[in-house]
Amino acid sequence: MHKEVTRSWPLFAGIGTMMIAHGLQMQLMGIRSVAENFSVITTGIFMAGYFIGYFSGSQTTPKLVQKVGHIRVFAAFASLASLSALLAAVYVNPVMWTLSRIITGISLVSCYIVAESWLNDRATNKNRGQLLSAYMIILYIGLGIGMLLLNVSDPKNYEPFILVSVLLSLASVSYTHLRAHETDSYLVCRLLHEKK
Image (cartoon, rainbow, N blue to C red; front, side):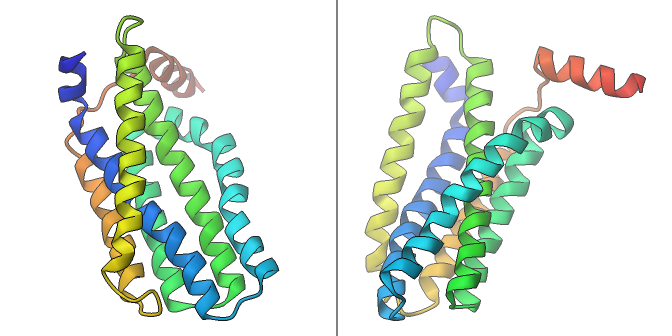
């Protein structure tokens, strides 16, 4: 188990950094919406945008992973999540924030799918529970640390949004240390695609 955890440190570092950013962004947008005098209904609508994106991304990501691989999908969606944080910083209105939350939902669920499928592929039946529990511990610790980062700057400023963007960009950097590999299902899909 320790061998798999140490071999998966880039994945754990990437998802942990991403969760720090997400923990900060969740709290930041809620607090900032109160400061901007958005109504409760408006705030509920744009915060629900995350789950709309989450649902859509969960339907499309597995196909993308099969076509281009784990690392590229993670890097692309971490960058897209970073962009959505900047979008929320630049355009402070409910419509753009709803779009930002939808993009964030699509991006983060895609990164979760990539991370969990990567771990599942590496795990054996003997160590799967331990490996996934280490993943979940890192996930929740990251969310908690992110919430503590609200103290870094006033939520009315743009700096916390920039911090979210920087953290999301850093998350994709750690993934570049993973070795590319092909699962059996990915190899079969690629070979079928090449025959067409």
